[in-house]
Structure formats: structure tokens, C-alpha cells
Amino acid sequence: MDDKQLRDLLTAIQQGNLTPEAGMRQLQQGFATDGDSVTASIDGVQVDLDRQRRCGFPEVIYAEGKSAQTVVDVFARLVEAKQDCLATRVSPEQAHWLLENFPEATYHPEARTVRLSQEKQPQGRVLVVTAGTSDRPVAEEAIETLRWMHCGCELIVDVGVAGPRRLLAQLSQFEGADAVIVVAGMEGALPSVVGGWVNCPVIAVPTSVGYGASLGGLTALLGMLNSCAANVTVVNIDAGFKAGYIAGLIAHGKHARAE
Image 1 (cartoon, rainbow, N blue to C red):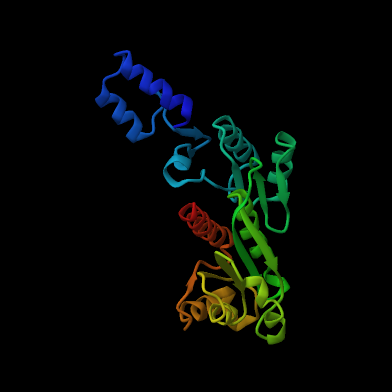
Image 2 (image 1 turned 90 degrees about the vertical axis):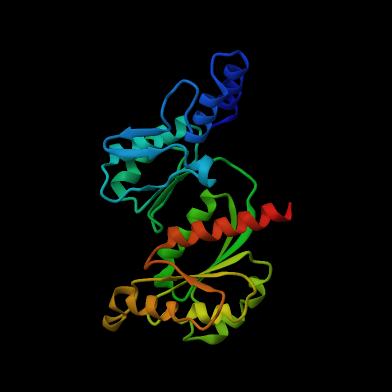
């Protein structure tokens, strides 16, 4: 519920057009004063327009399996509600139609994301690290998510455990980070190494990069889940969006407490 909707609700109660009990129900349920639901139904997609109020950030569109027109229509509804937009796992065709309708949006082909967000001062600082260059698409998805969340972020690429000096040369960059996202395939060892150097949460992202015994990222996932470093937590295979979202929440929460 935005400021205008809240003001209208309070005015309706003050003027006796709405009982306090009914107003409380509308506030709790996230309904506008005109009775319109905060869930918009678009081609079978139920768009949660109340998520920003409840959770701090709007609903994100998982574009895979949706038609290009459906993704465009969902963007349009979010824009109408004055909410930032992020679509993940976007195909080139979907991206084409989104940019046709929203030329101000940002398409990142490597991350497979389209982002449409207001300009705001970034809050917090998250470092995104990859073990190898093959892990970069997943890292870029995390970066685009952090940018959508208006969170400060930096990327360090190709510092995996096969060349230990590469990570050591970057250690000064880790100082002051609110969270670190570590993206790695193969055996998934890098998050444990990073965890031993930093005093903040490390979010490990296993990727499906590797030869046969990597089992499409399962080996890295199990290795990360068994990390000895106490500050390491793990998200799903190739889940750059999930890692970015969690790191963004950590950074925003830390910034809010500091204020």
C-alpha cells in the first residue's frame, strides 16, 4: 500500500465511510481502498503486487516457460504499480520484446536477465567471486539481482583453488564487505577457502560446470554443504539470483541497523 492509498484509507475512516475494523482488515490484507486486489492475474500468472510491502522487494519474474507477451504484460503491471522489475532466465526472444516495450530496461545476455529499476543510491557492499571464468554467467545473475536491489556490488573473476596466489592477491578487496558470494563448480572448494579469510557471511553457489563426476553441479553442492568454514551457507545449483537476493537482504539489513 503506497502513501496515497494509506492516506485515502485513513480519510475514509475519519469521514465515517469506513469502519476502523474494515480499515484494519484492508491494511492487513493489503487491499487498496477501491477494493482492487493486490494480486493481478495475467495469462494464468498471479502477480503478487503486495510483495514489496511485505518483503521489501517486488516479485521477480522467472521467465523460463512463459511467453514473451506474458513477460511483457507482467512488466507493464509492475510498472503501473510503480515497482521495479527483474526477469531471470530470459530468452533472447523475450529480451527482444521486453526492450521493444521498455527501451529503458537493461538486458544482460550473459546473466539472462532484464532489469528495469529506479536510480537510487546503492546501499551496502557485496563481493561476488568466481572460481573460474566458466562460472561467470551465474555470478552475473547475482550481480544483476544486487543492482535491482540497489545494493553496491563488485565482481572478482577466476580466483579458484587451482591457483592459490590469485585469491591471495585479492584479499584486500574483501575488507568491509557485508557479504561475499562465491560461485564455483568442479569440486566446489573455493567458498571454504574464502570463508576462512572473512568475517561476514559467505553464500556459496555451486555451478553445473565440470566433467562427468561433477554430476551437473551435485559434487560441488555436496562439497559446499560439508564446508568446515562456519560462515558458509549454500544455495541451489546455478542459483545466482537466490544468492544475490540473500546477500542483498544482508547488506540492506546491516545498513538499516547502522542508521
